[in-house]
Length: 164
Image (cartoon, rainbow, N blue to C red; front, side, top):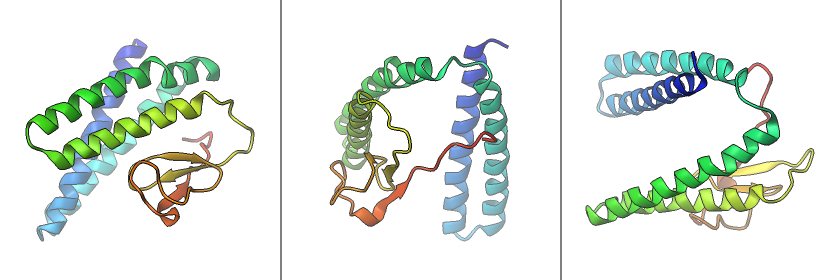
């Protein structure tokens, strides 16, 4: 199977898992526990499938520097353009909360692009805002520059294990 089709399958299953998890949360919130458990099982199954595909993809992608260049280059540029268009559409539809969330996502992507311009330092830790996804090297900032979250809302980005 070509890399593009494998990557597309990974994206589709990952999206389905995220959607199923959101449906499970809503079912639980609405008091439909049996449906929530079933939807949670669906999400877990799809996450397992996505993980399997991620392993296959890992064996087919290029060397680290090439991958970093792609992730922080064309792929990030496409994402930022798409987020801008989606934020504009949401604003035009009167969906101010969604527009703000999408704008925050774009701001985080811009910050990540700037962060990637600096060489990675061996052993350097990164802190991730659990509200908006902003990434800060070393220690959390006094306030998240994107969403204003306090340092307690930051969590360390865990290292990637070989088994993932």
